[in-house]
Structures are given as C-alpha cells and as structure tokens.
Length: 242
Image (cartoon, rainbow, N blue to C red; front, side):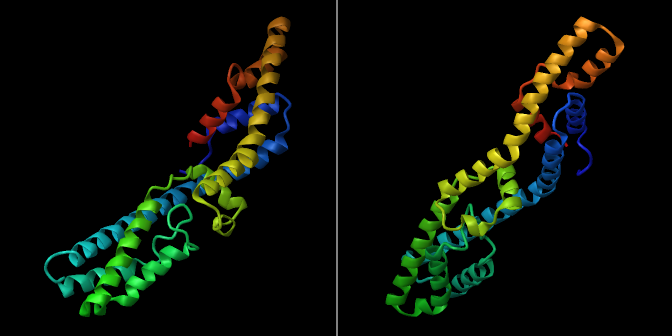
C-alpha cells in the first residue's frame, strides 16, 4: 500500500531532466509520503467518531421517547441507555464534529450522566433530565450537519499544526484554516514547480524537433510526461495514484 508511486517517480525524473529545482520537489515528496501514510488513519478516525455520535443520538432519542410517553419509563431499559451513554463518553471527540473544547455540549452530556436513573424518582428531576436530553439532541444535530473536512487537507494540517490551534475557531474557520494551509504550504510549491517544468518541457520538445539529433531526442523523451498537461492535472494524478 505504501510502496513507490511510479507516476510521481516519472514526474520527478522529468523535472530533473528539465533542470528544475529538485530540492523543492524532494521536500514536497517527503511530505507527500507522510500524508499518504496517515490519510487512512484520519479518514477512519473521522468515520469512527461520527458513528459514535450516531450511537449517542440513537440512545438520546430513545430516552426522550421514554420520558415523553404516557406510561412511566422502564427503569431497567433507561438505566441501560444511561450506562451506554457513559461508556460512549469521550469516544467521539473530533475538531470537525464535537470539539473537546465545546463546553456547552460536554456540560450537557455530563449533566445527563450525573442526573442518572434517580431523576426518574421525581417529576421535577425527570423534567430536568428531559430538557437536558432535548438540548443534547439539538447539539448533536448541529454537529452532524457540519461539513466534512477534506481528509488530505486535514492530514497535512496535522503535520504542521495541532487541534489546539483549531479549537477556538468556528466550523467554517476551521475548514478555511486547514484548506489554506494545504493550498499554500503543500499544493502551492509543487504546482509552481510543475508549471515551470511544463514550460521547460515544451521548449525542450520544440527544440528537439528542430535539431533532430539523438541527445535532443533523448531529452525530449525524458520530459514527455510533462508535455501538454496542466499543473493541476498532474498534481491530481500524483495524489490519486498509489
């Protein structure tokens, strides 16, 4: 899975043949390999946290239904749901879902756990528990509606930044932060290098057609992979191929 990317190797050879700055490319490739190794873990973490939130939502909806029913809740089933909520606590923290720094969410969650099964003993406490569960469900809805981050951008961001830097931001600002870092620090440098390589490759091929000697032909063949392409087209293929 983490073997050599033959397309990237071909681009690297072509850029070298075109006389481009290979230090820039080697630095980019080193970061690419790190991002490529870790992107699956980031994707799985996001999916896992979202699934845990869906479990919390399902339990909360059952509890709300029991509290608003015409008959008293089954204390055994209600206790089981509370126990499951306690077990799930902390399993769903993710800056693009439920932030660790979301004090309103975690305070509401803690209150539900603290009130517990004893809240069913009095109408006042039962009503308070119902209100807290309704608040939790509304907060869950808001978190589940958040836009999923681009996993490549997120993976790259965690190589140069931390969750702590994102914690105080709004959901939109978090997305903008990781996308800006990805475009400026990861994609931008190699796009500029590819653009230069393509221009040089086009010149080399045009010159080889005029000279028609063996050395010129070999150099033209070495850069051919760049010819007639756009930087974005090459970049997208480099990121997709394993």
